[in-house]
Length: 84
Length: 153
Image (cartoon, rainbow over all chains, first blue to last red):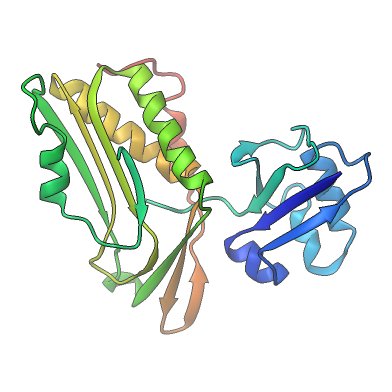
């Protein structure tokens, strides 16, 4: 399964990248599993761990950790929004 | 367009008039304009980052939700992105209805949801350096109070 993953704002700066295309093992079927998978890169990637207040969207809709993922999805991770 | 995300400034007068232009059924227009606040916080500039695509969609969804709650005749939401300085206009929300009740309520509802759901992030430049603005719990509280209120008409 291949996903496009986007990072925004302070998270983008901390990770040093704004976008990546990742081929993932099939067992990464949810947003929560993807978080865990990315956290295993270690170091700054631990920011994506649950409890660090990093939000997620799937195909440009806000998504919880239990949200299902499919090949071709666009997943985004970002801090709480501060517009307005 | 009902929803616009742009670097350019906007003309509040023109945007407000557009809400009722050419029609006679509008009895009330409520507007909100958000500005970059600077002096007291030492902020000398800021940059608004957003998530192109999701931003427009989330604003359209918020407007659609407002229209299910109140009988609105016209809505316009404009949010700026890119570099801004204190005093600059950031956001415009304008709502036209038959009466003031729905116009006031829907305008406030749209701002409360925009603050918590639309993917914008502010980075401030201060004499001590750049800092990302933290989300505020009070904004979450403001949005949450609408979840158990069907309508304030």
